[in-house]
Image 1 (cartoon, rainbow, N blue to C red):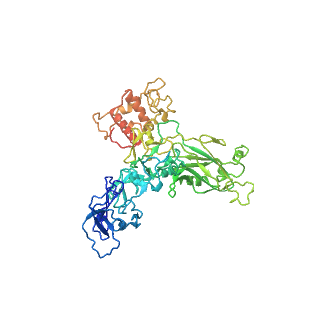
Image 2: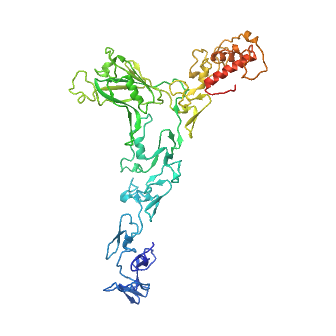
Image 3: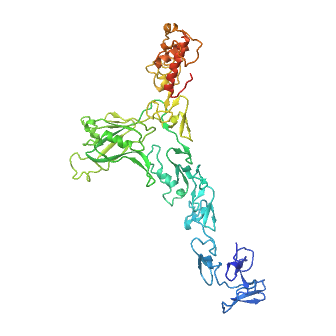
Length: 589
């Protein structure tokens, strides 16, 4: 203890260590009261008082006038009465003096740490680590907790917490979010690297989505009395912006796509049917984070009339951030609208009922396991017999929309469960986390994101270059070239009809080509510059299929080798074809 000394009081009172009973001792508790000789309010008594070793003691005068001198020799006595609160100015100007007999300071808020109100308090929060007060009860919040949450040091001159590494907030009540970027003006790391939001676990639960992308409806820390979620508003992590990932949101994501080498990939098709005569409805697909509430909500279209057209429904669906592209087809265009008024849907399935409209929604670019579309029919009315006096009020919610997915049928029309994978770089490349660009494996390039091996700008490695080459003659190893054009044949070797293995496009009978015309023009055999047109090139086939035919039938088997000019011209054709098929420029063959 730093005991008050004579400089802390207007009349030089002082305190020292006691023995626990008001006498001098070695407890270090400032419990021994000392008083000065010569104080104008006291009378000094020579001699030795009981228990005193100072050669005298002081008692208060019965009367005191201010004109008496106030500067005296510092000689200490015992049991001098206290007549003021501590502090150069009573309670250091930050509290109220209780007066006699205790003369104790009642400090103002924020100054209650020291008895003389001279030191600031720091903000409090429940302790991060402490002893439990009873079974399953700790991190006591009573009284606001402890200063700096037990994870920082209080600066008594400023009243601010100096938090330990990893903790932040005025009371060190929050964990810091990681960050890789540096704020050069402030000189410290930026939380979530400037590409995300630092949220506590309660907030992260609000925005969490299911694996299918729907709102999860999760909560964490809602009940303040739940001992298992005490950290809901204290533990924090990064919620990264779109196209960013990593614990600190410093890494870029790459485009996702379907693996072009997998079998039987199909696009999701969902079916809808509506029974209503008036009103409006909305459709929802997956979810988004609402900027106002900070919670995840369904991604919902604008209100659509019951007789909305296929074109307008397509526009409304593609306006959602969760649907890139969709195709909407009505089975009964004659209805000129979505909903068909009348009986229940179960009756509409009866073949005798001719008026029905099955809506097919094909998801062109959405990949992975897709959740079903949901419909809000609270404002949709089905009143085929005019039973409601006011459809807008009485009939609301009587309309019906059915949704069928997963391969189930509706009136003979089958839905399709999508089977395209959702893989970063289509599983055929490595994502460069600095640029967000896929480094595709050899033989793969960017696709268009649709179901089919088509070159595009999606950047997902979803285009199989090898497939483009094999489609000229079919897949490798299939005995029927008409059938051998799918992705399933890539990577297999060997013919199946006995004409030799390792054939391109299955087994073909070997035919020796006729070079009689080109052989009459054999010249310039020493010319190796491919930029010079050599004689014999005029007979080079034009189609890519014929080019590969000649490569296989002649160069592979060595039968009736063609003249050099023909070979050189054949090389030109192959080079030209490669530039187009492989998607890169090269002048070397």
